[in-house]
Image (cartoon, rainbow, N blue to C red; front, side, top):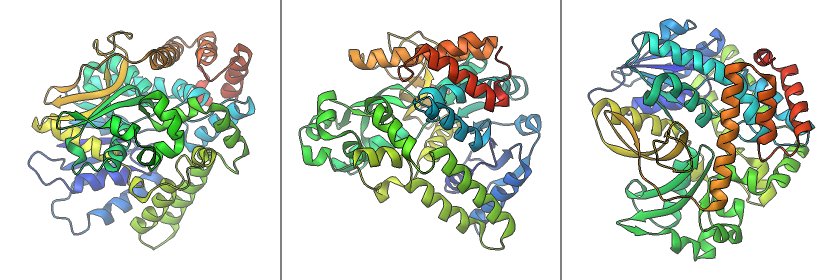
Length: 446
């Protein structure tokens, strides 16, 4: 089976390849094609993968190319993890937003809109090429903003594009761990929302919902990442455990202030860190894998550090430094390729699952996965406060898609102005001015 990874020179590609190395079953991935626009990045990552596979019998063959059409032809699965504009673009997203006093995070608020506006046209082109060159391929999208990009691609690929994210998986794992669930894989996680905008409303083990036990115990509730981040009282008020990205909504002023006072924004930090990684691999005879491992540990330990500092949450637990999206991707590919039926939290078309959204809207919910793809499971309605937020953000996503399709600058302004974390039409206009000034990829907005 052939897997093409778009963004194949990306820093997290070794996580995906490492997961593939653990798969020894029939029908596994035997050939990995890395595609990237940067030869230097491809060379560095290929070195890391070669060290990973050393001594592993029948390790998947790895080839690399900068030709997108060549990479797509013959693919059974396409894993999309591109970053349009690179990490420098992410740093600019943050800088422009913070200058206006609003959030510049890459998937939330102004930064997420800017990232979406320059990414959607590229993602649509990829989807159209897949439909033409590899019509039987399944696309697994990890490109952010994951829900928005998945919805853009679904207009050309239908249900053959599925978005993945490790946030809900990590959240469910942490809740199961603190509740003493011996096998978290056997727990049913009642999770509903959009990508980076969802809530765990229940965790059932052997038919019994264990979440009320967690909410009733302040010591347990305050002992893990989300309890520390949001605070015990707020979680008990919600009666649910929100995705960590909702901290940007519930504590927006504090988050913006922390980002404004940080020595470096997250994007700027990662841009410097990864530039150093690629330079070190290129110039050093040392183990590329060891350099990558060291860099990854630092990256994971500093994840959402401004939010944790604002909340007084301290450092991340060691158990939370292991990533996870690569495991979701592998489980998804196995389920489809071998009809190994499983349940995963995924980004898929709504199909009536949430009655407040239309059937084409991409949402993030538990799905039953088999050879025919991912099928969203029926869920109970969201409470009013969550429904309002989901509908508001989905409306913004639709304006982003409309702006990307039409190239209308006024529609882009509307997308910014309607977002709940952007509080002024005038700020929205200045954001569009700022972003078009630093991103060549937004020159299409007229």
